[in-house]
Amino acid sequence: MSTFTILFAVVLAVLLIWAFFKPRKSGLEVPDAFPKKWSAFLLDKVRFYQELEEAEKREFEARIQGFLNRIRITGIKTDVSEEDRLLVASSAVIPIFRFPEWEYNTLVEVLLYPDHFTEEFNFSEGDRNIAGMAGSGGMMSNLVIFSKPALWQGFDNQSDKQNVGIHEFIHLFDKQDGVVDGVPAIFMKHQFVLPWIDLIKKNTAKMLEGNSDINVYGATNPQEFLAVTGEYFFERPKLFKEKHPELYAILSAAFNTDLAEEREG
Image (cartoon, rainbow, N blue to C red; front, side, top):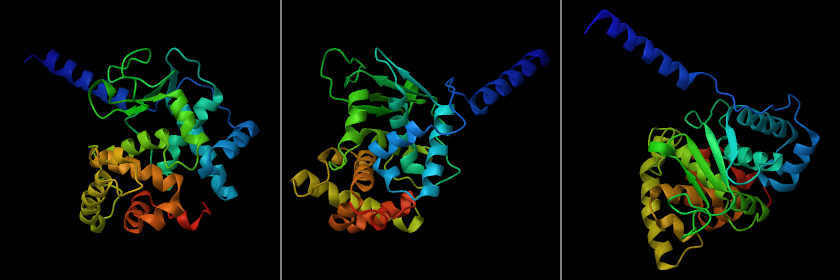
């Protein structure tokens, strides 16, 4: 191998590393001061934000700004409003709010579709039963996709224990240790990992028997179990703690928050 070839390979490698790790910008001009109309919208739509202390609200707003500065949000055959962006960013911030230094390092772009979509990403025909998808590999590695109506529904109905925005970002939370497997080991203390796996098995059996109020979609596999129970945890923390105290304890440790003590609902 010639000296030139070796040098070219080294330069190429450096450029690829720089391209991946350099600070990314979304291309959106985000105001330095959080607009009052944005705060009013969050108070109306995002219960997690509603329940925060005033200083925590300012931190949540700063995290929203950081996300919008860094991550592109693109509409596919649909317009993207400020409110759409705020719901996407809120979905992202909620699972990692208690980890101040953490970001979704592999995420580059969020796509909004005008409706549910198929496994082939078709939102106009076919069996359109997918509301959201987070990338775990291949062409999806740096993407999250949402049906825009489903994203809004997750925040409009605050009592149904479901929120597709939170659901998909929990998958990325799970991915931080390198694999989407339903065991976010990088955040979950070691003493909880084996009990968590055991609880997945026990609760999956109950769900398949129809003896659980957890959405049966969570029985699909461990990664969906984490995302589904995570939605429940953030949407209805007191009810979740009442119905599933063991699951609640482990998710409180994983997400570093005890929401049932902070909320009324």
